[in-house]
Length: 113
Image (cartoon, rainbow, N blue to C red; front, side, top):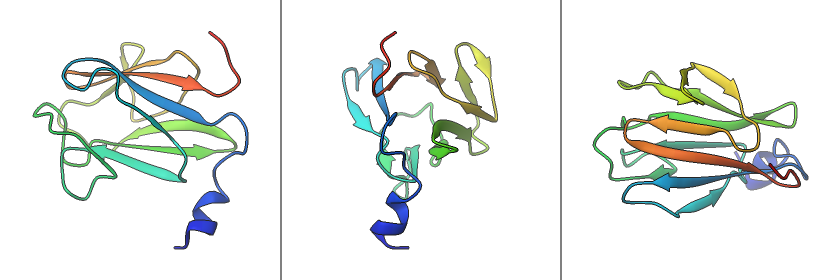
């Protein structure tokens, strides 16, 4: 798949940013500027983090209908959004995600919590 076809699925406004809120990677930020981004500790993950409590391919971030979502990829410890375990969840500005010991915060461009 070419970069141009990946970009077609990413909204031009309202893009999301993920920030690590606590732990070893605290302060790390990355924009969700691709059609899909896999986070995990495995070499095939788009965002590879050396965190023993997350799976090799833990979760996928993507966009659908112009809104960011997270989808658990069958991880051992699950993916929690605002304290509730979800298989797939649309994300809003300020949402807190937990993947193992990793705590993430979602920011959506143009929205101020």
